[in-house]
Structures are given as C-alpha cells and as structure tokens.
Length: 316
Length: 262
Image (cartoon, rainbow over all chains, first blue to last red; front, top):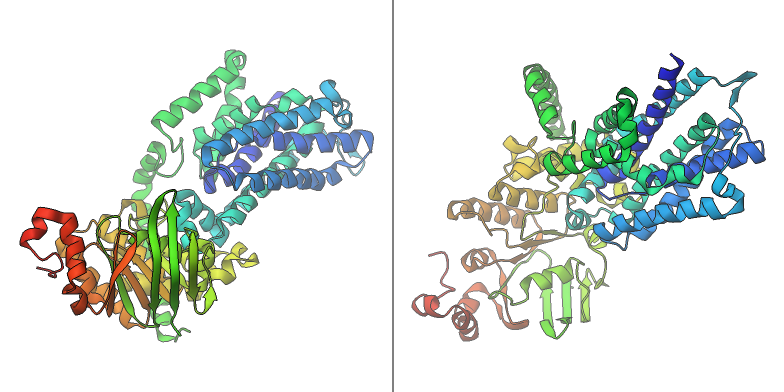
C-alpha cells in the first residue's frame, strides 16, 4: 500500500510537470527542454530554505513558485529572438547551466546536493506518505484548474493562434512576444511549485536529478499522451510514470524506452495518444458521437435564441 | 487629409530595389487597387504598410501619424488589417474561434482583459456571428479552419481582417487560387465591405477584378510607380500595357492584358 502511495506521489509530480509544460509546448507551440531545471530550481530553493533557514514547508511553496517563474520569465525573454530550432537548443543549454549552478555554487550544496530535508508538518503532525499524496494531488488539481481556465480565456486562444501561425497572430493584434513570455513564466512557476514538494518527499536531492535527460522524460510523457490537451498531459504522465514500476525490467532501460516512445510517437502519431484528432480520440469521438450530437442540438437551440435577441439590440 | 500617405518609400533587399521612391495617398473611403506584373513590389508595399517590413527610407503616415517600422500587432491596433496572399488560418481552431480571437482588439489583448473568459463577452460573440453570416460561412462555423477549401479560407481571411472594425483593409490577392465561379461572389463580398464605409486597398493579379472594383488604380513595375489614375485611364495607358506586354510576351500579343473580365 505504502509503495503504491509512493508511486502515486511520483506520478502526481510528473503530471504537474507535464500539465505545466503543456502551457508552453502544447498551447503556445514553443519547444522547451528545460522543464526539469525549473523543477530543480523549485526543489533546491525549498530544500535550502527549509534545511538551512528552517523555513516551513508551506512558505517554501510560493518561494519555489516565484523563483522558477522568474527563471521562466528570463528564458521566455531570451526566446523571443530565436527561431524554434535554436530555441530548443537554447533550452537544452539552459538546463545544463542550471545543473552546473547547483553543482558549483556552495549555496546549493555542491555535488553531494542537499540531504536531511525536514519533513513538512501540518499543525503538530509530521507528513507521512499519504499526506504527501494528498498535497501533491491538491497541487496537481490547482495546475489543472489554472490550465483549464487558461483554455477558456483570450490569452489561451491567443497562444493557440501563436502556435498555429505567428505572423497571422501578429496581424490580428496579438502581442506574440509578451504572450510567449507569459506562457514560459506560468509553465516554469508551476514546475517550481512541484519542486517544493519533490524535495521534502525525496528528503535528499542532487544536481543530477534535474538534468537534461529528465527534461526529455517529461517531454516524452507530454508528447506520448498528446501535446495541447490537459487529458493528454495527464495520461502521458500516468502511463509512462507507471510503466517502469509495472514492468521492472524497463527501469534499467528507462531512457531508452522513453526515447524510443518519443521518436515513434513523433513519427507515427504526432498528436499523441489523446491529443486533438489523434487516432484514439477520434475513435472515442465516433463512439460517443450520437450522444454528443443530441447535446449539441440542444445547446445550439439555446444559442440560436440568444442570437435572435442580440440582433435586436443596436451595437456601437 | 488622406488616411494613408506614403512618401518616397524605398525598400532594398541587399542589392535589389524592391520599391523605389513610391508616392501614394489613399483618401478615407476610397477603393485603391495596386496592380502590376510579378515582382513589381505589390506585396512588399503591403508588408511595409502592415508593419511586417521596415522600409529602407521614406515615410508612411497613417491618420497623420508616422508609422513606418511599427510592428504588425501595433498596426492592427491602429486600424490597419490585412488578409494574406496564402491563406493563413489558425488551423487547429474553429472558424468561429478564428474570428473571435481576431476580434479581441487592443483593450482585451494588452492588459488583464486577456485573462477573462472569451465566452463571457456577449458583444463580441454576437458580432462574430454577424461576421460569419456576412462572409457566408454559417455552415462552417464549427469546422476546424484547417479543413476549409481555398474559397472558404479567403472568406475567413476577410472576416478575420474585419473583426476588429479596422479603418483600412489590405487585401492581398483575395482571388488567388479560387475558381472562376468563385470570383463573382467574392467580388460582391468585397464591394459590400467597401460600401459599408471601409477604406480598401487591393493587390490583385486578376486585373479585371481590380479594375471593376476600384476608384483608383496604382500600377507598379519593377518597384516603380508607372501609372496612377481611374480604371479607364489605366486601362488605356501605353506604359501600363507595355509593362504587361513586355512581361507576358506571346499571349499578350494577341490580347490586351488589361481588357477586363473577358
């Protein structure tokens, strides 16, 4: 049971990272291979502050969110001048720089990293694994809720417009540059928030846990599940997060497996498992079509009435 | 005062002079076409006006303000909207969402308004439905823009350009790639847009279409303005006929290339 809970926390943390990454990669269409660096920034600040400065867990959450968000803002600002392929390389470089900072700056504990990170407390109670799971799921719920809301806003649609055609987006007045920065900032900030629970959950962190390969793993999860959709991000984290646990032998070939999945998906099903217009989701769409058509016609009936009313009122 | 004034506008790409000291003024409410053979600089001119290209020298005045070198998003907010020569839809979004996001305008996009839900804005929602009807895309409103055919894409381009109530509309070859039977309805649509009070600039390869719609025609050839005037005057201008004949050789030898729709 306890083992399952540990896997659950791990998957919830991965899911936060993929849903957050989806804001940049899925919505805005910008490559980002530095997501684990933002996780690392969040984790390191949470670890240092709680271990050395005895800052409570709950206070480290906003700090990690803010620090990683600031780093995301800087990356976003750099990204404005770069074409997609150069941006991808830049994000990889950034990931290495962040790891090097963890490794060589004494503040971050050097190569040994930070250990004996205190367990969070709530009131007089010290966190057990179940508490970690509850808090991780609450954090995930927050990221999903923000993401879902984002999809409904003008900003969300504008990011999709930027992904589909940047010049056309600019021609209809969308401030392409600043919106990209917003996407990078949000995505990084939520990855940092994930770091604030990741550090005390592991109780020890080292620079190598936040390397480029970990960023590839997170991106593989998103692409596998279906970039551009929240459900895809969640399913990708769930399936690929559970895979090494279910099939133990995979854990020895973890990177090989993820790399192969990434390549195969991009070649044969770039929409991912559950992305827009992917094979699986169109199959589900076909199965549920009759029910949805009925719902649609009801909704359209209402919308039609609304339109008739609107036409009567003068518009300025 | 003219809505758009262009003063000795020059654009160089390396050694190539794409536009050479162009002078042009467009009055409010006018319909001005820019025609000319391939490579004359028509699209370059539009790209400068829309803020995509920064001119090498010269001035662009919109509503009396110097705007050369402004960014496309800024030009859009000032009231200059364009359609693209190659349809450039937001292909993963529905036709309705394409138009809706194009209707947002400066007040929503450049502030915290961008964090509001789109569906909550009733005024924009009903304006979008009106536009969908105006360009005749009712049956395609919920279709992904990526699935539209060329003619439907043209209509979407126009609806998107109109969405923010611009004061100057730039149409870059709206008839390109649509069949002969699509041109009539398209011309009707463009004429209607102009009649509603909009100032329109049109770049067009179908010279007949351009001449039939315009108040005034500007002819470019190899980056220079070689003629300007009423459609009739341009149709009979020696230099203009020469420019087209010179380029199109044998076919033009038997047919006046400016002869109209025939």
